[in-house]
Image 1 (tube, one colour):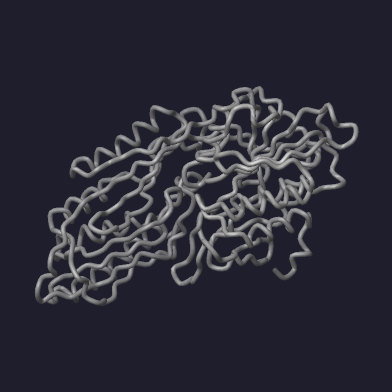
Image 2 (image 1 turned 30 degrees about the vertical axis):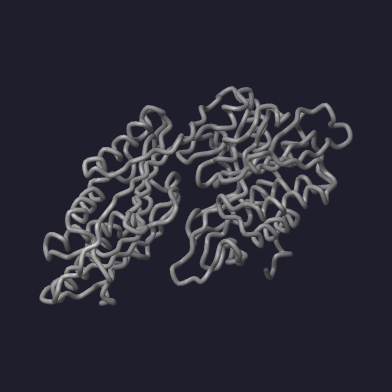
Length: 483
């Protein structure tokens, strides 16, 4: 990337741009594991891999710091793979294309992968450093954080020697996270029969696009549009006003992202064509008015398209549309103790057709375990009313805040000394691997922090350049002053 050499700290950015060249979708981390193993061994450091695919690299203390407590730095290898519809890109083989846009680093048409590529880069820069004063360091790189946290789940007790862990997977410089929500997915399978397209029909492609989307934890309270919910409203009205028949539906991709785009093909009697087009045009204005502040670029479009080979049977279509309409999405409850903090939420994440089945993925989050289960059961009950097959993932636990954390006190002292202001101490509604790590290592003292990222899990993802230097300076000061 041009002008890369202008960014500081150079060693961190060097590793970040190298990481951008390595494909690393969730559950397909082989290439990034190979990169980490090669890097660790090239630095002549102890480099290990466990059965789950996690990588651990250990670096001895610098002179005079041998008796300082071991510090574990932790980041995840995988990234959310989202792209714009008009971008030709294969996340399994292609390199991310980062570029500098003013004070930000962005990617061309795809997610940037700074979540959590920048965390990995900071850890690797520490391992490669020659002039940073520090005690013993362990850098843990986990797999599959974004789609199941299976790497953290597979960690074995006693693999880590340190009892102080700094998670590098937060997205707001100046904010320290000491707790997070737990989560799980509720997944639905619906069988349908294929029926012939009625005579005298026309086919229409309906698209919902232009939405911001976002992280289903961090952004769930920002009143952004969900493309799956919007297209459901369209289909509900077309079905009952014009007896439209549904042929295909597709919306969203990742379980932990708010759906940005959705599409459907419907067929209807030719006599309804003008009314259907007029309805879509009117509905677009309604949605734009509803989302004028939070998602002003939303588009709902209709175009004539090729006649599909079949339609979904009428019985399933009616049940499906009503279930999707009734399925909750968004904030279910706010925290009773922390003002402005989301306690419980649910996300209607994706709708896909596979053969003669429709697959729906939803995700639930809560800082209260019982409320997480309640939210999942609420979603399940909607689809069970239509006799759909509903399953739950195992989920992951929340991370209970420790107000007496020593690592919190130390990092806060460093922050105040460097920047002459107080950091914000928070819990986060997103999931972090700290909950699972804490289960395996109950004595681990943990905190999560990082540089500023925006629009994670979307092609609008961007990394604020100046905050990378701030986080690096904070990390170096913490290590230097640790006694």
